[in-house]
Amino acid sequence: MKNVAAAYDSIAKHWHNEHQSDDWWIGDTDIFLSMLRPSPLVLDIGCGTGTKAIYLALRGASVHGIDISQEMLAIARQVAQHEHFTQMDMRNVDVLPGHAYDGVFAQASLLHLPHDEITSTLHALRRRLVPNGILYVAVKAQQPGQPREEIVCESYESLEYQRFFSYYTEENLTEYLTEAGFHVFSSNISHKWIHMLAKGPSQTI
Image: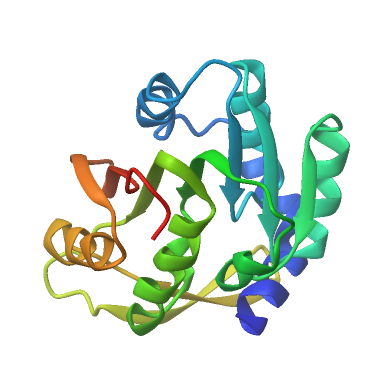
């Protein structure tokens, strides 16, 4: 994750400006919000520069965003000043203060973890939810001939950087969620992204 943090630190301003027009995530985010109680408390995993936090907040949520990149968070704190942001590795959510969240929003974040760390991370996310809390996950779908994991070399003009990515099928993502104690109740693929909604157990386990 150190390489991921360094990459996002180096591209934070470019990334923020380039992704403001993205809309592939809105439909499934609205479904996620519709599953939560009014005025929910939401944990935004890999919140980036706060664009999704603003969207969630404008629809009534109180948002706690975490991200490993201090430069991405610096922008998030400017654009979403009423929300709460913490710099941390998503694998360490157990050390957050004792909030129980109505929903966990993990959109385009778990894809930066290797497959062998996903189940333990999902276990940790489940422990942060209220009973019957809702988890929304969006990861990149594995395409034919594509490896499960790879380091991708990219650039913004003369700025070169690398990011680690893991890719998924609906089957293996469902398996990981089930192993972590979730019940998957919605799954679809759109714009090469797998979107899944899952419910935590009715009591803490």
